[in-house]
Length: 326
Image 1: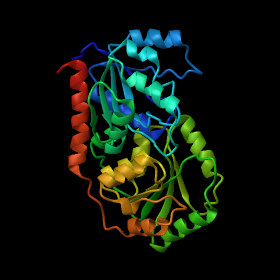
Image 2: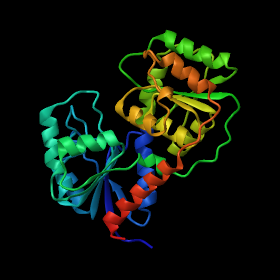
Image 3: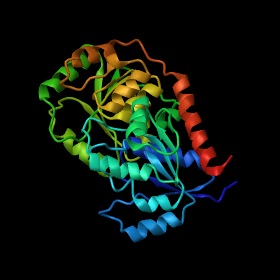
Image 4: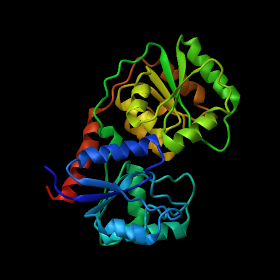
């Protein structure tokens, strides 16, 4: 039975980024008896009057998830004052601290977080929670709940024997080709096959694909898909995964696939600490790259912590209860 509630979603939606579109799917499932609408107002696309009109049609606004509380750059799309005309619930967000600290940006975010209409604040890792408490100082308690993608039911996919998924992402500079030669040779020396997956749709897929074409990847298979479900199936067709994309790692590990995180950004460090696999994480140029790659390639297996899955589900249950009062 429908609750008749209208809920507006604010986040990095509409660009085909795998993790963000997965958030949207999870929110739609958690609030399947409500009317969900994405209302993110990017200033260069949407006028303030249109955002306000969309907001006034909602009973509540959910902002999240992802790295939306950016200490070094104020993102006007996520923290527009128009959203505060309705009760606001901030869920499963992170804080990327790698870019430094800009006081003006932080003060603008603090003004938003301290508004009386901010009813709930949830961070996806402890470090992000502590940063929000210290620098943004919400009037409501800030809680830690694991990334909401952890809440998803495991997906039953039989992996293709010897397939190793490799997930890259668009970035300003192409990594050293020698790193890819080493990666591909290590995979083949283990008797396995590299399988390059473009983990995105829409404009993200285009950007990632064009980036991948700049890299010399001879004799490798590629997978391109047009929707999140198909991407997840392709991802989990791999016995193990090496990923520059955070939610490639989250989904792989949550489905018991050994996975190397090809990054050392905040969210990777926090998540790999949660699953007790920091030794499986290193970007291409890092001193631990070789040891991390070999550790994942030689791993006998991996079992995801069901307590993390349940904690993420409990977070969504509490969010729902806060909004709907049940």
